[in-house]
Amino acid sequence: SLLATVTMVRKQESEVGKFECVLAESGKAPSVGKLHVYKTSAVFKAEMFGLDNTTVSVKRRDLTHLDATQSLKLSVVYKDGKKKLDLQFASTKAPFRCIVDAWKLAESDAKPMFAVPVQKEDKHAKKDYGKGVEGIINMVKDKALTSYESANEKLKKVMRLKAGAKIPPTPKLPLIECEAVVSKCLFVKVHRAENLLAMDAGNTSDPFVVVRYRGLEATSSTMPKTLNPEWNEVFHFRTPPGKVELDDDDKVEIVAYDRDFGGLNDFIGYAKVDM
Image (tube, rainbow, N blue to C red):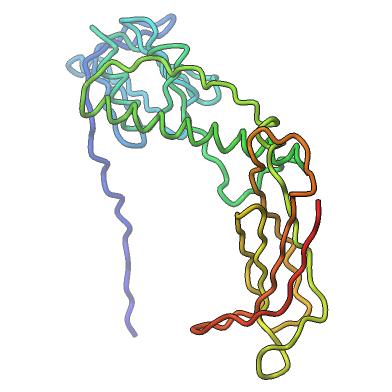
């Protein structure tokens, strides 16, 4: 028989920064030492010729916020605000910047030299925007704000790393009347079709529909091998500028086809809806 022993050895993190400082704790004598910054932690170690063995470690995952609003003092608040590491530096700018970049923290626009952990969202969780037009308005607002904030953070990083520029506060996002924009759209929902013509061998079809409004087109997904497809898909079209109400010129055309992969699609049927 063969007996094998495997020992897991944790690789030591590489240090990204080291700064001389003083640890000031209430009721205790100050400790002179250095703050060592790593990717996932920060450690203060006293260096007083063996007379002081004070060591304080803070994990990135426990951080509540990083406060360097005072020019000589850096406060590392952690454990949901229950604990705090107060360090004094000749200047807090360099250690603050090192921790923010290493830990990928989000800086406050309203409060300079103040940063918090970036809140991670569950990418698989679906947001509830509500139903109908109000839900669409809420979704448009959320997507626009998320895209704006993401682009703004990337711009800040490029300016900071490459240009060395001082980052100005984030300007206020201009308000857009989303309801006014959405109200100028025509929404068409295609539910289903029944008893379509069989265009393929095996007495079946691969149907999809093309929806047209004033020269604009939208195409549904293809439902394979069925004569009674269900799409439940919503398409939206912009109405002409200045148009307040629909009239006799507004028509929606729906054309059904059988998808022939690699060949011409077969026409199945046509419907027109007068507005």
